[in-house]
Length: 420
Ligand code: HEM
Image 1 (cartoon, protein in one colour):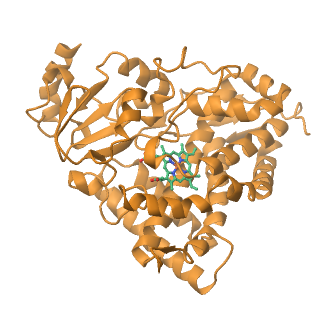
Image 2 (cartoon, rainbow, N blue to C red; image 1 turned 90 degrees about the vertical axis):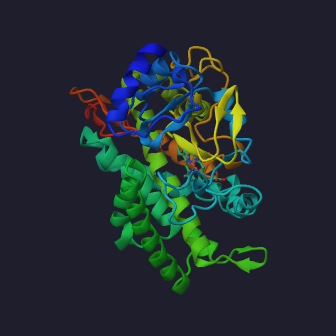
Image 3 (cartoon, rainbow, N blue to C red; image 1 turned 90 degrees about the horizontal axis):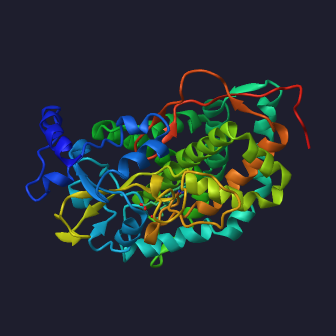
């Protein structure tokens, strides 16, 4: 296998990838493009795990500017606990391939400053704060499901997933109606392009929209997260415009696209597994545990860390200024941590996963995300108990930092619709 890949390296180089650094052993070099690789197009979880199991646990790809890839959950768990070596700040690796126009707070920060900002956000996204949103989210889910139930079909991504997540989030953040569509368009571009120039341009646009929104909230405060942020302090001082913008953007980009993706993966799975739907309908009280199993099975994020100092990690020499890719999308289906990992089994004890990340940067929005997913499933399964994929071409996916279905056409028999 390694020999075959070594042969592939010259052709990769001719495709414009950077030369492979001298300290990288040829046996650790593999062709892996997490934005556009074929393994991300169809059934990415299956394809990725099959491919990763044939490779060393840690390997190097010359794609996307060249970076290391961490294939196993245990190694990732260790790596994220060492921010002094593996930083979250893209500037450490020159910011050449990532966005360095502004600091995305707290996601681009390292200790000790990271902890202060995280604490501030934690109170706004705590389980108690999220519980207050339950009625609103439930009503929103019910209305949205009702908008398609009688039709017997929908394109789930555009008609439901994007509208659901955007609707909740935009209200939560206090983003004015007139900016909604533009915001969503630019977020799509920011997270899905492999081209750093396009990504930078998209983030710049989001930043200026965020500035506009903050201005409006300053003039007319509401009950939303951005209005609350405007009242917060760090070390006794109010947040400055750059900090407010950085936090606002992380909340928006981090909270919107992720829920869209995970919800769609879950609905796709259920559309293909009517027995699992029947189990959920028979025991709705088991939904939280079942949901956790679906979250484990359907990770979505692939994110970088930036190497601050030369290191030897698990026997692999890495140099300052390089990057490592964490495949949070597949750590929940690592066969060293869970048996028969691709199978969704609602009766198995909740298994450890990293769909929400791990370590100091573990997702701050996981309580809100779980609430959104749970409320949606509750309403969808009550109104549309028998749904399936519309027969047609195989479903395709975008790769990148947030893996996502391109489209998800569903059908269901309207006559047998059950309302509860
Ligand atoms: C299904 C939905 C979601 C998934 C799969 C997800 C996943 C993640 C992951 C993997 C990280 C870790 C990033 C890293 O290690 O660098 C993260 C961080 C973060 N997430 Fe989420 N997320 C989701 C929903 C949300 C929502 C709804 C919000 C906001 C309300 C949110 C806000 C954040 C924030 C602020 C961070 C940064 C935490 C820090 O840097 O300390 N996420 N998320």
